[in-house]
Amino acid sequence: MSAPRKYHHCHEAPAGSFSEAFARLPLTELAEQSRATNLPQVDAILRRGQVRTLEDFAALISPAASERVEQLAGHSQRLTQRFFGKAVRLFAPMYLSNECVNVCKYCGFSRHNDIPRITIPVTKVVEQAERLARQGFRSLLLVAGEHPKWVSNGYVADCIRQTLPIMPAISIELGPLETVEYAPLVDAGAEALLVYQETYYQPTYEELHTAGPKKYFAWRMDTPERGYEAGFRRLGIGALLGLHDWRYEALAVAAHAQFLLRKCWKAQVSVSLPRMRPATGGWQPNPSYGMNDRELVQTICALRMLLPHVGITISTREPPSLRDGIVPLGVTLMSAGASTEPGGYDHFDENQWKPTREQPGEQFHIADERSPSAIAAMIRSHGYEAVWKDFDQALVTAPSPALAPA
Image (cartoon, rainbow, N blue to C red; front, side, top):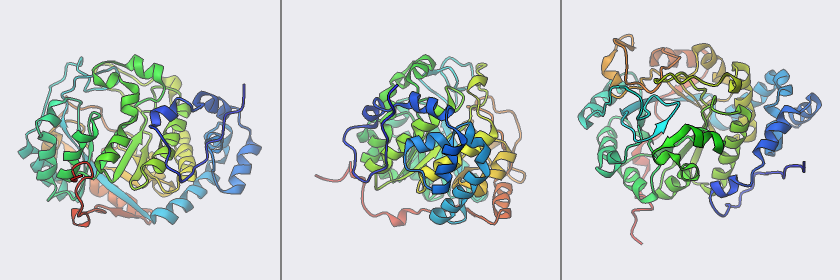
């Protein structure tokens, strides 16, 4: 087998889309190379203190490198503090709708699942934003199942406009759109676009996504670039760990982030590697693709060494013990006190911030159920600052490039 070509970070914007570049990446070879890495190779990279290529990154997520997690963590901590300070940004997801036209075998919102289908009105979105603001949040992620009517009828744009006075930083996580469809959402005030590829392994992707527009692998992969053209200032990508070999997925996310840093250089890029949890419909993560806590920490630290300027997110999918331990080691964004059911915050006790009833319409059940104030206190206990707000629309004066006159 020929040696994989080296993929160095460079500042020249790449031509073409990531889906085109992705087809040339030797990710399977790199994953195999990772599993064959020996400890002297790992130590050589750690002595250098710099990760230059995907080959280096593959070595640091190897089984051999698991013996050097403490050294990895030290490098990661120093780099994170250098570029981000001792701060972790907190945000809350708000699910607008669980109506969806896709069939995705692992998702609680899949159209074949028998769950209560809920879409909350804009007035309810505002009420929920006010409840979250009373908990301290000033950063909101609006999430919805993939249904074209919510964008075409202006619903999402209305949600953004109405919540903007309450939540100065609004991100969205919707089904992929064209640039011209994203532009009104940017103009309404959204500043970040999150879209996870779910799995970068195309055979598994096609097996899991059997109906609906989500079937189209390359179309989804190039979504961040279309969002950047529309004017989003932050781009978030990731993979769901538990659908395929986690080393392959981590390598793909790393390569995608490298590409976006070069092509979408005006935007801030963040990455996430959430581990899958059981979902409505009986779906369970494949244990053969499982990643344990130590391997997740190892991968986050390796990502930080490869991508020192990139935000790294850890969600409430992860258990409290893991989230507590990872705060000083490389993460920069955390969700807290989350509900994954549309309108779910209506049924939270505001003092304890606990749901007062079951949430049958949720996408998945979270693992860290602590209140936002408890999460903030935990972050401060590490000597870090819990940042509720780091963006305001007053900083922005120009309209979306896609809406500006020619």
